[in-house]
Length: 276
Image 1 (cartoon, rainbow, N blue to C red):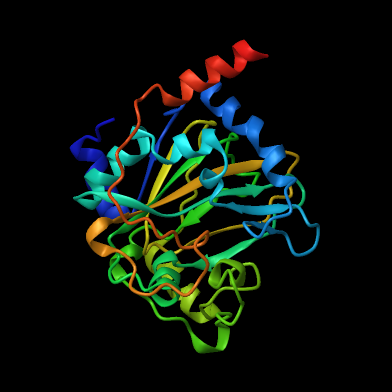
Image 2 (cartoon, rainbow, N blue to C red):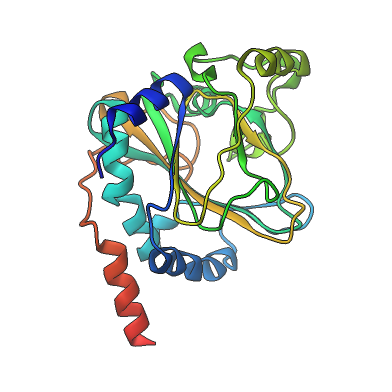
């Protein structure tokens, strides 16, 4: 999967890029079919909503689930990451964010690289997220919101008054459920300067965004789930220097990814369907 110059330029200028309908219905159905079993497991990789107990994030499902392992190595994600980052990449973090209908809580405004730099020792922002919509994403079910162009600010330290970095194990991954690390006055200034966008699209679309872009999402009060995977690809020459969080939060395999074949998910979907 090759990006054209216009797409590369959009990412460089805006800090995000939406690629509609990259994965087909069978590939999406295969991944969605795995989620109930993943969410039912009582394991530290599963972070739950504070009130309802609904699954919030399933971390590192590729370590024990074959379809999600294949997705993390899929060329339709890895090749754009290589192009945009300008070199070989490895998987720094991988999760399914399941903003379930009615109970999907807020992700407050934050910057991923601040976490990865402070908690995991990532030297520079040579990192991006490649998300796959497993449900249709609309204005109603809590789409990700970005302040376009804010990635050009680079690393943004937290406002001390709002920092929640003392949360154990998950670090700021859990802290962003409690509140933004940035004061309202800071956020107001950025919103007036950069504006806000909320990319939407059908299931199977891919949303790529820079590790420094300011982003968040509102609660999902709708009747429709907003489930998406997020693969965080880091340049191999930008590997972590002394991560403090568990290996399922900040992954430790820094070897360059060798992508699988483009049909790796379709092949598995066909074999699963035949077995049933």
